[in-house]
Amino acid sequence: MDEPLSGLSLKMNKPIDNNPPYIISAVDDVMYIVNTLIEKSVSTSQKGVIDNVIPGISALLGMDFVGMIQRKMKDESYPKPVVQGGYPPEEKIIAFIVLINSLDMANEYIARITSALLTPAADEHQSNGVGSRPLSLKDSFPFKNDAKEVAARLNSLNTSFSTKSNALLVEGIAVLFNQVIKQRLRPVLTDTFRDADYTLTEDELAELAAQNDMEKDELLEQTPRAFEHGWDRLMQPIERLMTPRTFTAVLDRTADYLARILEKRIWSYTGGRTSPDGAIRMARDFEKIVKTISKSNYSVRTLFERTKQILEVANYEDDEWDEEVAADGAWILSDEEMRRARTIVRN
Image (tube, rainbow, N blue to C red; front, side, top):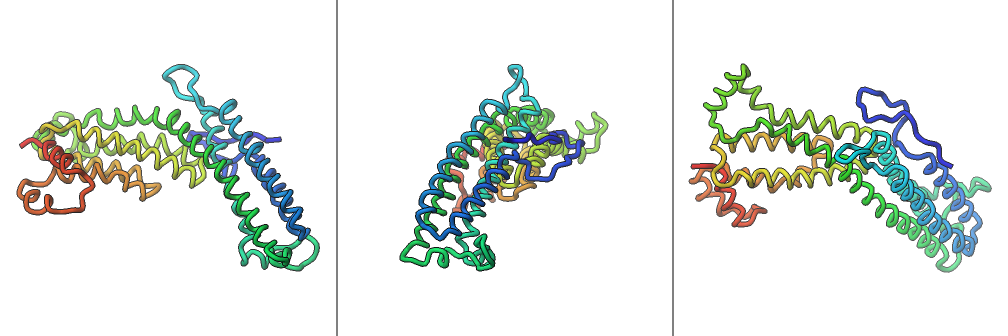
């Protein structure tokens, strides 16, 4: 039996009364039963009991528990739009995120349960359920290789469950990205680059700012600020609901997608379509965009190394390029890509 989790919202101005992680109640119930069964089985000191109980638990978790979450994902909570071209309903997105969280936390719980029995430091504090004598696999199974075989059973349980649950977890994150995040990123990117014009010189940009009654610095910040505004509106509500591990996985996938989109945009300027000043502004804008994307996880910046290098190559002066850069072996771009990057800025 599962009790629905209420009070969650994608609206940042609406507080959440529950405490994270946001998971279905069945996770705590099932893992409590699993933990109790394993501890009781180990406390019997009968290897035959372990041989019967652990494989049964593994089969039930892999088929029934993971299967239950999979059915909920597909039949009850799949985040599909009500009308073609629209966005999925908020309650479907939230329910789907909760199921993703539930898989993640179930992985953690099984890892904790098995680790508590396998780790020597934990052995000293475990009770056998009968008296105060510490529970240890070596103490409980002193004959031949029984303790090692029991440990192998426990490790197999952890590995088998994590393999099945992680496969569904990866699938769920892909669905969340494709059905929710990717759809909403498109208007974010459209708004971001709507007024970006990298063909303008600095004088032309200053004239444009004056025509629009704006400070030049304000005009320069339009593109990165537009992206940050759209990014935060999209990602912060999702980050608030997800576990840190699942949001990291979503962020990695999103950043990888954006890295390819931004690189494609840069290549669209080949053929001398930007001014020297415009190429410098583009590099600054993209750096600020990457900073916004990576503020939750700095490591995703590595996914944008290609875009960074393309703009570096484009912005080098001819003498700098000929004397220093061309001889440098630290580039991940091919020779053809570097030659192409040199055509972004018009002479």
